[in-house]
Each structure stands twice: as structure tokens, then as C-alpha cells.
Length: 184
Image (cartoon, rainbow, N blue to C red; front, side, top):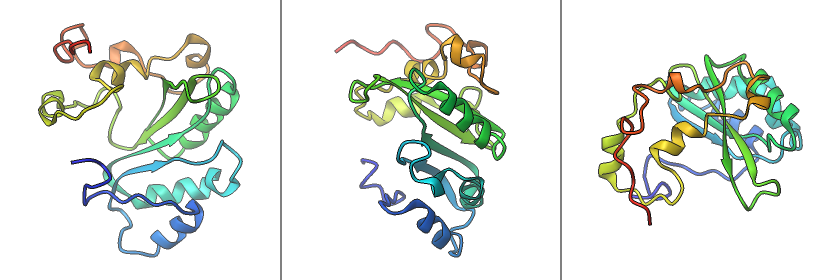
């Protein structure tokens, strides 16, 4: 079952600030397990980058939930990446930048932010055997990529308030995550 056909999933294409105001008046306060904010470049739509917006998202989230937002290129806009983590870390216990390499983005290097008050992106156990059993056809994501994406360049890592480290990965060893995925 794909994410867009899963009845637990709702994709909303709307003004995020207006959507949030409406949701804060609904019975869904405190029920969201995952909030993904795929917004414009940081600062372009000002209402999506305020403390008030992030406080509202926290109110929507269930006790064990995660918020993911796209941030910016750490290669080109490191100061923005650092600012975003600093701002959002005031609302979440765990607030970690992670990265991917996207040839469709101008610099090819992009960052996102994982935020949660209960789930640590590396220390919280993941049932990788369950993931493997689902046979989800991913062309990029693997358990190795999951952990590696939180390992950041020293120039960025040294300026963040929280950064991934290999020692945070439970039982880290080349064979502890999952058997090596076959090359395609």
C-alpha cells in the first residue's frame, strides 16, 4: 500500500498557516503521528517560519510523533540551516538536521529537520525486519542511509546544538543494521 492510498494519510496542498489555524480548532489536536512540512525556501512564506507556527504544530502532534521539514542547502546556506535548528529546538527534545544528495536541487546537497519530543532519530529502536517484510520498493532509502543521513560534515556539525554521531546508533556495526542489500 502506497503512502497516498493509505487511509491513515492525508496530503494537504494549502496555505500552511491557514490550515494550521483551522486544525487547531478541530478534534484532531494531539492526534497527528507525523507532520511533514514541505514549504517554500526558508523565510519566503514568513508565516510558516514563526514560533507561533511551530508551537501550533506541536499542539497537533500525538505523544509519540515526528515532524519533518525541508530546510535548505547546507553547502550554500549553512547559516539558515543552523538558524532553523536553533529555532525549532526550543519546541522539541530531539531536533536533528539530516541530509540527502538530490541532483534536482541546484547544489545537489539538501537538508531536512527531524523533530520529536519522544522519538530519537538514531537511538529509538527501529524494527528493520518489519520494514524488510513490507518489501517497500525504495530506490534511495535503506537502513544504512537512514543513519548515515544524520552524519554531517564537520563544518556544519560543529555549529549545531544537536548532531548525529555513530555512537548514537544502537549496536552499530556493518552487519548489525540489516543484511547488506543486494546491488541492483
